[in-house]
Image (cartoon, rainbow, N blue to C red; front, side):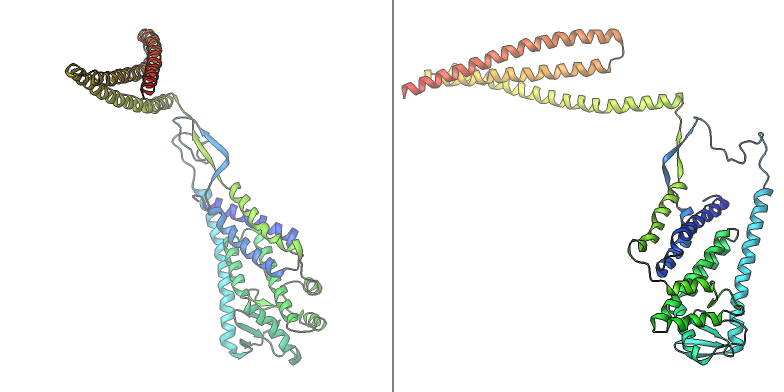
Length: 436
């Protein structure tokens, strides 16, 4: 896409539409894993869809002949003037400054996690790296590191807290958080991106809570633990922690049964939404309106296109005519040879046999002549269709009618001859049968 601001606006619109659908139809449903995949797919698609360039099947832009496309920001300016670059430059500077601040905050949070891990050290427990730090707040995890304040956690609650954090680690929730942070860097100006991040982290907490209950923890005891842990403030919003979402919604979700039936298919609405956005962002098909010169060129091209099959037919007619001429020569040579044999024949039986062969060859000569007349008639038709001079065309039409009439008379004569030949052969066959 040529204009980066168009990309940002379209990407923000995609994210807003996807998140609005989530807020209206999915956030109260208890299929948390599907909701997680929906939110991740929404993030990826909101970044990718504006880059897809397709031609709209519905909209067409007609451009007058001889005109060039003019950028929208220069169309209204007097000739010789160009738009000031100050406006776009200022917007770009503001955008980059905002993105830089969000990115810097992200790096600061990563550095804070690293500083705590290096300062406090870590120990391995239940497949996790436990960082025993003295911060005031709730436990949280980042990838396979879990940060705990042991002074605030009772030993009886340790297993349930570690089970919760282990669920975050095993389900790779930190990758989701990194993706949402990248999205917020690109879309920092979009209010939906901050709501999106909060909903994604809430979904992580719902999944971790379900994982703890699935391991056999008492529902009432775990709900009590959530209430007890809901004090103070988390150190780093970048990490997954027990306080990421409102405690009330988490308690409600814990007591709610998982959604079943047709409601589980709701996240698949992401696909038709994505298709609708691709069509909405599609570029209109540009059609240049034909001018006089273009019309002439089109007419000439059309005439050439029409002439091409006609020329092919004329070539085929010439080839057929040449073959007919060869057949005609062979037929005449055969007739002359049979006449010479007839003169040399000494018996009546031999003369009768030669006479039959002569009769067949003469009938064949008439058939060849008939095909030649048909070819001549077709040549006249093509010549009439291609002739542009009215006077010459009139002469060709008269000749066509004359040849057509002669051909009709010849066809009648050929038909009579054919019937006579068939009658003669029948009589001869009958005489032969009687003699036998």
